[in-house]
Each structure stands twice: as C-alpha cells, then as structure tokens.
Image (cartoon, protein in one colour):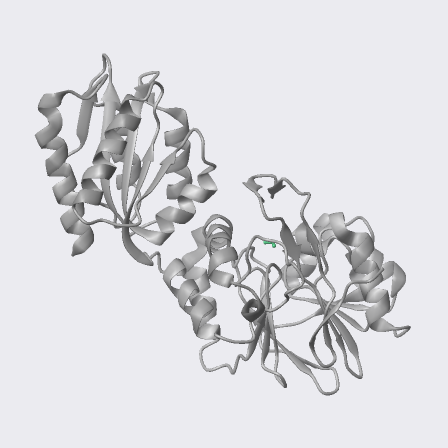
Amino acid sequence: MHCVQEVTSQIYWVGGNDRRLERFENMFPLPNGVAYNSYLITDEKTALMDTVDSAISARFLENITHGLNGRPLDYLVVNHVEPDHCANIEELVRRYPEVKIVGNKKTLQFITQFYQSPLQKNFFTVEEGDQINLGRHILQFFFAPMVHWPEVMFTYEQTEGILFSADAFGTFGALSGNLFSDQTDFEAFFLDEARRYYTNIVGKYGMQVQAALHKLNGVDIRMICPLHGPVWRSNLPYIFDKYDHWSKYLPEKSGVVLVYASMYGNTENVMNRLATKLSQRGVSDIRMHDVSKTHPSYIIADAWKYSHLVFGSPTYNMGLYYSMENLLREMAGLQLQNRKVALIGNFTWAPSVAVKAMRGLVEGMKNMEIIAPPFEINSAMKAEQEPVLDQLADAIGSSVKK
Ligand code: FEO
C-alpha cells in the first residue's frame, strides 16, 4: 500500500524509510534508521525528483503509481547519482519508456557507469541555470559539485521557492510520520545526527559547500527538500547557519572533547582526572570518548561541534594505538581545522612515541593549535605529576573561556 505525503499542492513526498539498515554506506551506524526522500510534481507535466535506495524500491514504486494516478512520468530529475538515490532508474524507464532523465553531463556519465541498460535515448542534458517548465512549476538547475559527488546539482522550483537540495541539509534518522522539521523536536532528535551526517559524508568538501551556499545568495528559498531527513518549510536561517558553521570548520560551541585510547585504564584515568579538573575550572558540557568503544563518526561530529580537543593515547607497537591513529587520519581526511588541541601520551619503555605521532597528525591539519606542552605518563600517573596536570587544566580552561 502506498505511503505518500503532500508537500504542497501538486508536490508529494514519495520516499520511504529504512530502519533495518545497520550502516549507511556500509560504514556509519544508523541507530535511528534513514529516510530516502523523493518528490513527485504532478503539474501539466509530471516530474520526479530523484529515486530511492533499492532496499525500499517496492514501496517507492507503489507510491509513484499512486501519485501519477495513471499519468505518464515526463521527467526524472537526477540531482545525485549515488545508489541510495538512483537505484530505481532502470525500473522507471521500463515502466515509463518516454521519461526524460534530466541531469548534467557528469550525471549521465555516472548513470551509464552504474547501469547495464542503454538509457542514453532517455537522457536530457541540462547546463547550469537551464529551466524546465512543467506548467505552473518551473525547475531551474544549480550545479553543486562535490556536495557530495561531482555530478550533484540542486533543483530550484521557482513558483513556490522550493530547493531540492540533494544530500545537502539532510540527516541520518528515519521519518516517523512528521515530514516537516517544524513537526519534530529537531534539536532533540535530529540535530546530532544531522551534524554526524554532514561531517562524515560531506565534511571534506566545506569549500564546495560554501561555493554552493554563495551561489544561492539572493535566491528566494522558502522550502528545502533534501534527500534525507525532514523537509524545511520554516526557520530556514537555522539550518543555513548550521551549514555555514560546519562548512567553514567553525566550532558551534566553546567546549572540550576528550578522546582517549586506553588498554588497561591508565590513560583513561588521566583523562578522567583532567576532565574533573576542567569541570572544577568552570568548563561545562564536557564530552569524552573511548576510541575503542565509540564509532569514529560520533567522535568526528563532536570534534566539529566543540572548540577544544584533547587526545590521549598509549604507544602501541612502537607507534600510535591503531584506533587513535585511524581516528586522527579520518579527521585529517575530512579536513577538520581551526581547533585548539592538547595531547596526552603514555609509554612503558619508549618515551614520547605516541605524543610525537599524534602531534604529527594534528599538525598536518590546517589551523590546529597545540595549546600546551604534552602531558606524558610512564605506564601510570604518579602523585608528583599532579601540578603538571593542573597546569594543563589551567591552560585548557582559560583557553575555552577566552
Ligand atoms: Fe545520500 Fe551522497 O547520497
């Protein structure tokens, strides 16, 4: 049975949810599932904005059949070719052989790479700024390369001011009947997952996100329809502001995230002692993660949110503990920058190896300032080191309050 929602008159959400998928891109945990959005415009001409993941094809196709109510599909606009959105193109062409597949040159190139069927006869290539008139609704295309893949484009519907924004402004988390963000407690349920989605999926491409945001300057956007998560019809400056911060790598909040690797609890003990000292110095909302326990995507999202990061790790096999090394390499790969950092090392017989390795990785990232000398323990912290840890807490605490 179809499950469709009205977005505006003549525009319908025809997507679906997946709460069974363990990991997005087979990498990122999905404790709250994920929504795959697709939108059907039933004007004088009909147009579908993207498709959905193969996991929910059956329901999606029922939605399309219901939404079209016997009419043909005239246009399939492909804003993004990643398979979580384009898995149903072949089936739609089988059902609607005259459909025009709308995309740019890259879109159409990627489609031919993913699909076996000869779809070229259905291709309808658009350039930046081109328009398609559906009757009452007019679609205009803005290219947004690397927000998340090179072919990505945004489609702007001029009459109602709707931006079909591909992955941008999306989030992990399935929809629970409430299609619009203003029907949800967005901050409680979606914001952390929106940040985790942005930072881990698009985080590397801040410059390109900024370019896309600038391109939209002056465009009258009254609604945002992303490919994941709720639709924005109110409070748009809120989500634009989040994207502006995230894509400029600016922290949303002054605060400290402590991240540690600990084999037998001694590095963890230092982190707990430091966190306590920071709390005593008035630092609030402290976050702490064990790299062996918490998936890096959550730690990365917190690193994007807060201004100060403390990394603590033992030496391992004459190098850095693997999970810490992986985390720091992921952060570097995603281009995290503009943070204040402190380092804590632990060694039993090879001094400073972990600290040097962490320093090297952190210094490889842009505008990362190590704000105090590293604190090191030799297997376990000793009472005589207390004043040195106090100095580190002083340095972090005063930097956070600046
Ligand atoms: Fe939701 Fe880049 O795919």
